[in-house]
Image 1 (cartoon, one colour):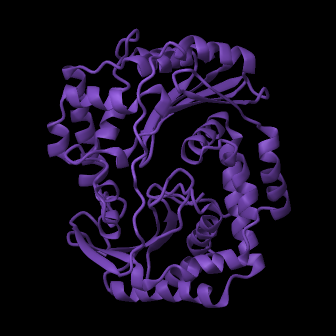
Image 2 (image 1 turned 30 degrees about the horizontal axis):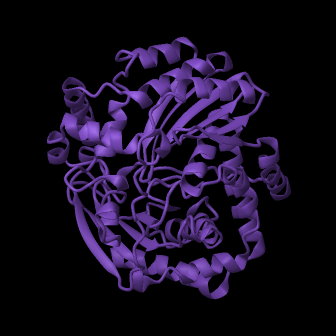
Image 3 (image 1 turned 180 degrees about the horizontal axis):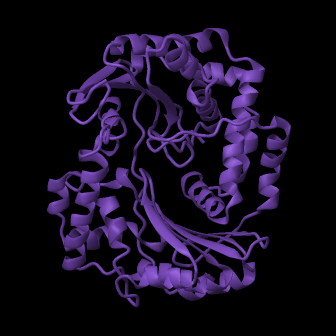
Length: 454
């Protein structure tokens, strides 16, 4: 789908009919099976015997929006802690065992979940299951590991946010204007004060509360035998002790009825920028309406033929770069309500931000009034479907998509249906989405480049 704040996506021509057919067949080619363990762990299997590779992923239903006040950044910090060893695996041994088998591994923290995953040759499946089960039982939560990882996270913040132009723009700054609740407005990377004051007791409590097997989804894809894999899952994850599962945090908010704005300064930025955020329909509870918004974002900004690229960059020449995307991290299908459609524009210092804003609103108003041509929409649908299908080509990409859909939507199968459902979106749905982007309810963040040159 549309990439996040710093990304882009291919704009090559794609045959619409072939992509739509492939999207409709994706679920048939990669069916999923599921079962649950007595401790509450939900398990999704997605067999594919075409290549001798397996992917193992564990998604925990805890992300940045679960953090309490005074512990900003803790979900991400704890992700780091999960790589510091476990009950039967010394520090660094997890990495050594995966790489020795010819595999790769990683983890990531999102708004609504934290995931851990490996991709390995299929004969190493049991090794990956053992490693994930071992740290689900008992990660090495020690004072030494905690202090070390706090320093690592602080350095990551320095490199990615504090010492990088546009490092916090707009993903950490715009939500503070657009939303009201602590869950939606706080800095998910974390403040140094909150990180430094974290204790081993905090980490132990966080693990006990959120890393229960009943709060997780285990998804395994690739070259696997279903019956044998179920036996292995029972062997390694079955003994994990069941614990109470916390409720999903209430992250939805009432729709804004007024415009909101703010200004930030960036001494490292070379040109000013502006970001506009609109609340969008519930990604889970109003999925069909939400799909119209997803395609609207693509139509606005993806590729040289997109509305804002033509108008802002090539036509009026009032922008250096522009992008539009849904979701804080640019993936519209791995987030719960509330979330935004964000348009961000980097522009020359000689161009007033008000000029950029009015032009963006004009282009959206044109879609709201005149609609979208069927051919233009088909091009956008073909591009987005092709991106989804490319992601699904790899065993790991497909496994991660199934796991996210199971955790967020309660249906892993949805990941295989999205391409076809995007193909079914009508021009009227996109027009309706554009009509919902009211300038009177938008959140606007202006970035002033105080130290750079335009």
